[in-house]
Length: 315
Image 1 (cartoon, rainbow, N blue to C red):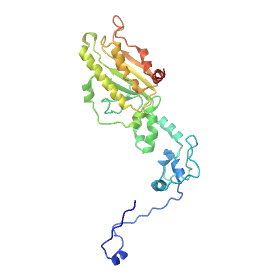
Image 2 (cartoon, rainbow, N blue to C red):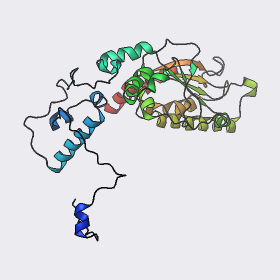
Image 3 (cartoon, rainbow, N blue to C red):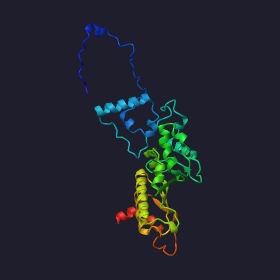
């Protein structure tokens, strides 16, 4: 958009001989030696963009800006996603690029996987997301120093560190809301981390009292309500994660919750759409006398799997 020029009040004789103030410097950009055309820019993969110099990024932006203002047809169609992506040659890479980033992405991913320590027992204390009101634990410690090198390495290593087949995130949903509040944190895990999680071990804790000290009906209903709230928050926190496995552990006082009450709580986990759901440590009290009424149907956990849900919708 062109703006009208305002007539200066300075005499013309002074305007013609005026020089720029000494405090201001006139900067001129040096053109890139090998400018890229619009087709090369649009087909450039993300890992190559991170390796470009600032001057090359400016040139790419100016090329895209010129094309947006004056579009023109391409000489050839852009490559489809199935074609081989553009890969820069060794000569086109910046001279100051670290040796690690000069390697192909597949090799870098293998290096990241080897940097992940072996699983430990017990799990180590991990981040404390504010949405869950409690800490999560990890079966393998994450080499956080590598994630601070630059944005490219962070985006490449996060899915491997948090989504490895041997990396399991332990989440505890407790009825004791006060205990959660005393452990509150201001840390909000980024969507990059939550979307990288693949394997979750969820522990649902509704109390561990003995039979003679089990809670009354009012207290038992209140605990169910708090656990359902915790599951709902966890579902929002894990939104976008493609869970491969979900292991569920259950703890409650004996003869407290019927199977129908348990089923209502477990149905709140359908939104996670885990590919595989298994039972962890299940402790629901007595397994004799009145155990039939307060039983825990482990076979029902398979109904929470993604495939079962899809089949039920189709049928």
